[in-house]
Image (cartoon, rainbow, N blue to C red; front, side, top):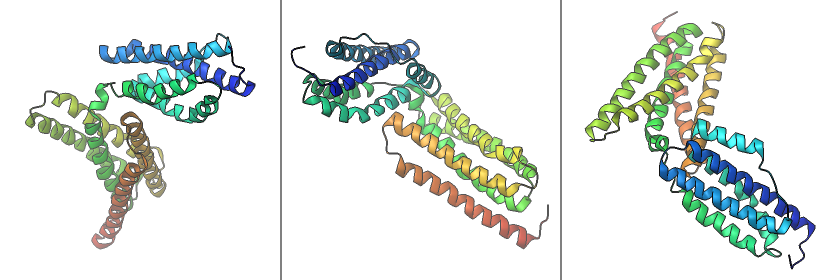
Length: 293
């Protein structure tokens, strides 16, 4: 190296060097099991580019490095469970924190500017080329999730005060939830068929699975808590609703590059409002009808 680089900059370069190598290995690992030849090629291309960045940084440090095993295992696991699109975009989102490091290096290492530009433009363009099947059915999953949250949250909240028995509430919710799962899935199937879509079965499957998982999670507090702990079960159910909405909204926000806060507040606001209204209806129905279960 002709130009003297400060120790602070070398420390940054070492961090960047190991990060590039780690991400190169992650892309290569995910490419092994990613479905679709085009997806595999995009991931392998990203792996090669990260490795090229690693080699550039190595010219300055003169050091061979090893990837961070924990990070490799974590993102590989995320890719298998939640899909490779979510995993790689979450990983790349983490690189936004590296912009300050690039700016600190710009005065001493001119190549850092070119690497930063490629990270921001070229790699983002490649990520946009990824085409994962499960993300094609996010609309179907949102349909099942939203309908289950709104319908079952309202039903369980209404049953809570009307029945005041967690086991009766769980039984009623389970019957309604399972029936509604088949109803929603079949409606999605018929809707897709009427539009001439060839993926009607897959679409209704994603809708039904999202609905059924939501049903199970919302009923769980009523099954786990004591018979008279219906208020505690209601609170746990509402917290579960918020967590489900937050988790799914975060997933779609990362995978599809959408805004998180407004979508989360909208879904949470609708579900909680329906629950409050239904709870009031349950209270009034018990008082007016004089029913005592």
